[in-house]
Amino acid sequence: MHQQFKEYLKDSKNILILCSQPLDFDSLGSGLILYKYLRKIGKKVSVIFPRKMSREEKEFNAFLPGFSDILDQDIREIFKGEIKYDGIIFLDGGSPTQFFDSDQIGKEPDFSRIKTSVHIDHHLSQVKLGNLIIHDPTLSSTVEVLLTSVIPLDKIDAQMATLAYAGIVGDTGNFKWGFTAKTLVLAGKLLDIGASVQEIFEKTFFSKSPDYFKTLSYVAQKLEFYPKLGTVIFSLPNSLIKKDNLKERDIDLMGDIFTVEIARSIKGYPRGIRLTEESPSRIKLSFRGSNLYNKINMPEVLTKAGGSGGGHFNACGFSFQGELGLVKRKIIQELRKAI
Image (cartoon, rainbow, N blue to C red):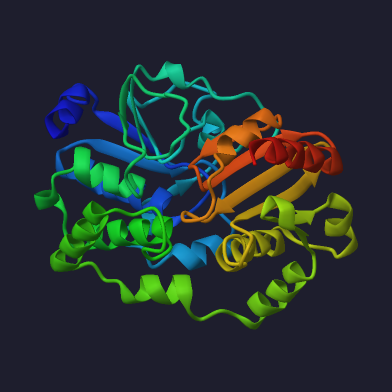
């Protein structure tokens, strides 16, 4: 695939790399690795994360090599006028809404205005966005797809190895899920190349703030347990967000805590669902499941419940239109059918 990828882009002089939402190490790491590689082979490249990052997000990710080269903006701004790019690469996302700021009002960008397009991804559910598709859902991360099918390992330097290791650690929870023997072999090669891993571990697993544990207590008190469904649900209605004066950073932290500490960690509850009512008619959902004990294809269940989104068997994100209680009842109904 290395040569096929290069051949496909041979006539592209100015390439746009689009990282996907949500913001994570695989999204940023794969974007920066590909950015550095394409520049090495003589391409003019821009790498964009498709919404404005918060100050906290920038501070958290600033240690990643080359992070300052990432532009953060709603990609629709680029598509309003004349487009300077003659190639576009979609990275680490299976849905068009992951590549623009879909939380803001406006039409979806017309990506077809850039004729040469490549879509590189590892998620199970996928809408094909490119003319050339490089997709392998058996791999741990988009980083692993890049280093298996696009970028030769002999082109990887220590900084790129650090980015790759961060992406793999982020998408596998430090090798707790979603990895194979090939992933471990690749991780070993990245260490040999010179990946710097201590700050990755420090940022990801240690140095939790006092607010982290206060928020953990807040989330734990609002969990709903459904023992017959083996599912725990954390709901955050808009009324509660207003009542407790919760800011965006508070809600993001709750999401991280639910995903890392709760969603697949409670004995007898191999499934965890987080529902956030972003507005009276818009519900954002995140799901995590146990690789060992969850036997239900949740993207399929959530699609049947009326959601739109995608992801993996045990990790996915969806959005719903409607009242929170009604959305929750539909999901529970479809879960009962699946069980």
